[in-house]
Image: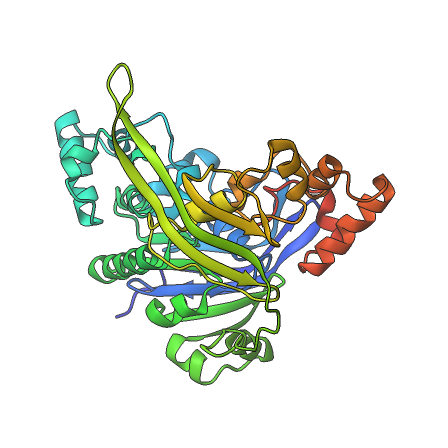
Length: 425
């Protein structure tokens, strides 16, 4: 006799500030199943996850529907009971581990806090449980890592700690919201493999929120495609990639680039960016007098050319020096040696004031948008900040119009310009 699904969402409608975000969402996840919720940014995936956890922002309202966890209607629970459910029966892994971990608490204390919230155990027993959890998620030397702080861990290690924390009280359902987006491809593969192993070994129900169809193809059992707050299609993963039913699903699959998608002849003969023997070294200092005892050669002799109209991918695992190259190009780091040329001009010795003006033509997109945007500023203010600073466009009306134009170019509804970064994913 088969038991019912671990999670059942029925006809879920959610609004934020009066705007309908989710429209009649229905999904089911069985024990031991990894279910992927797929869709573009703003489709409602993360709002679905936060609804399940009852962690929606204050301006959000659940207008209709049921969320059943092993038959228990989570929407009918008072908050004090929901706090008991979170962690013990359903847990969540967030997208950016550095934003989720407390920087002033050790890794051991943070995981222990979850255990002590839901179980009675002595200090020694809790310490052993935490070490076992860290070992189970592939953290080397788990007993030594208990006293480490988040900043002492790599990105992959931080996400493994988040997984350990989520599994601390053996929940039945794990919600993973873009858990590997901030990681490089090598670490991403390791973390996804770990999630799949845990799901199989513990018969855990996993809801994976992602926009990456490659990830879905590798590890998902079933999936649902979401767009504009609606579920368009639900299917086994193997069936979906061979026979997608909905037109939007077919569009999603065809947008995944193949090896030759962007190959074309570069007509420009003059490089926009040139790096010659670029070096960025960092001294390692120790002791009271901070004497230099060694040097980290983060970048050591890079040669690179980028032509107009060309996209060059700099690929490598975590710690290989990719981000250091990017920061050096923008002079956010001073290079130790070598030459950086932009449009034929050596920018190594450009004074700070002149470099500020030059940054009109040299821009960077950082890895984590949550850490890059001021939560106290509206979307419009964030976009206009650079224009105001560099005196781009003649007046506020022109800048306001430019904000609308830019948002439309990147597929954002202009009406979002008065919102704050935390409102949508």
